[in-house]
Length: 282
Image 1 (cartoon, helix red, strand yellow):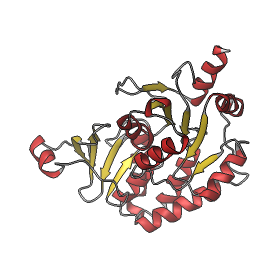
Image 2 (tube, rainbow, N blue to C red; image 1 turned 30 degrees about the vertical axis):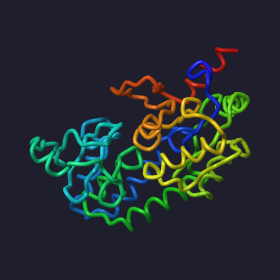
Image 3 (cartoon, rainbow, N blue to C red; image 1 turned 135 degrees about the vertical axis):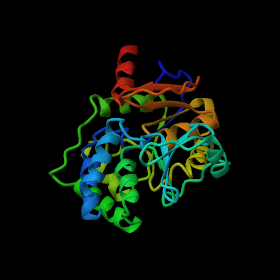
């Protein structure tokens, strides 16, 4: 970590998409959601989802989906103010309608206003567009989580993951903060052979709503300043933007890159990039 942020004393990790970077479970989730979509719309649902993954749809990671208006929102990632709005078909709202409808910072409740921070939310947004209920999406989500701990699902271990984390523990405190439930976290860490590596785990974190409070509480607990704390994650809205607003350092895992520039932001394609840099420093 010293090669990125020399004064780092506390490192806060995300779990999904960070400590493992597989995406097959998103497709499995989409296949379950498809069965909840009305028969006449199932092909449209899958086509939309595939287009989202390739960047050929208005819905994309880093945006938001307004269920009530069936609208896709482009945001300023630091202020969370709406800068651009599209309908599901990609047609654009005029600036007057954007200003009138979204005249304040968004509040995400993941029922009516959805932050599309990672791959989970692409099929979810498509499902909600096609009339799938919140209860049905949650049922499909729990089935996907159950699938992820079976022999049919194999996590791809990031090269040097365990060794890299052990080295980082020699430099700083490491904490895991995740929206996943405690049982799921324990199963995934066991699958990744990372049991007992994290002295502290915060499950059911309710990111991004509670991100700032959790980070502030952790800094107070460990007696570190914002500039000595690093947030590492793959979700711009959940882990990166709130950390930047608090003055934390950040490492954003994003294979396709990002236009946002910030003095406290480093962008890597994989967590393995961080561990390779640690090895090079030795």
